[in-house]
Length: 404
Image (cartoon, rainbow, N blue to C red; front, side, top):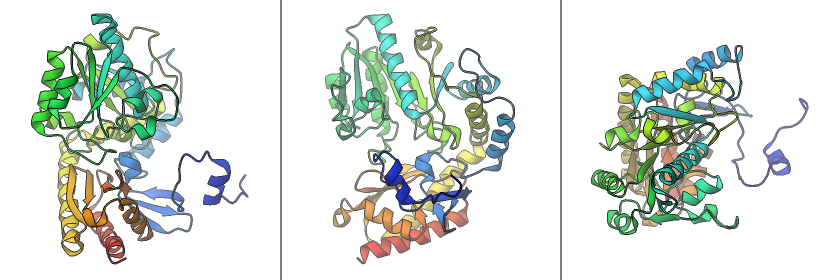
């Protein structure tokens, strides 16, 4: 294998074609910078889609991974393990929750949350109470249950009959939600800031009204904080800035700083319906993932880092405003903390991909959130120098697209 030419062409030969990755193949990273096979250097404003919260190869995470890798990798859930117990303790201490469940991804965390909500309703109210309400343009993962709860039919169509009793309404439209809620509703599932759907913040009064409707109808409120959690918005979890507490919260992405891990958090009262055997995950809560996540969580759950996220948001907003003054291509910048979306105006409608490609040509990695939004989700500890240089590259990319 060592003599094999590992090129982008190889992807097309050996990989299932469900992705269309960039031509560039990154081979190493340090902080907010990445290098490709030709040793070209890129600035990373994508963060592995809001995952690399401490950048690439952060020494604290590398150190913990090396140390744990020489002790214990996997024991399955026939046993518990110390890193999992420490991480769970820290997460429940820092949040509304009493109990944690670990898995390997955001989709799995949401799958667990939805199964828990259904089981809780069944046990407490009977089988009529089974409706799950979610939001158009929402995104909750790619398992068949989570993708059906997600509010983008394009991702769930074409795989046969979908799980039933799932309804969707528009985000930020409280009348629409009130109109379809009843005692049959078992849960309302929402992102406290829609990520994939276009980086859309909730109205503060709306979130409170959603909580009130859930209380009125004995429905559980599930916050999908897979993208917003672990410092991304400048709070440890986004719910903390909204003055509303969910019943169930899911976390992944930044939680492991790049190592795959997911978590579902809830109260003791709700958790007790998941008795032994009702749900599980072979790898969930494995010592490697939990050791790395514990180190990341310890670093991010500090006022210095969380305050730094808000400071960095201002660097980005100021820089983008200056670029937009010259090139007039964004109608607004949405989002919070280091989950930001530049919304293209009418003139550049549906051209987010062109901006992404132009940025890559300038050795800057960005994301999109739909056809109209350029999304930034960089490291939470990115330096001022890297933001400045990245925005200079972004400006050159914008200039190329605008000037055709």
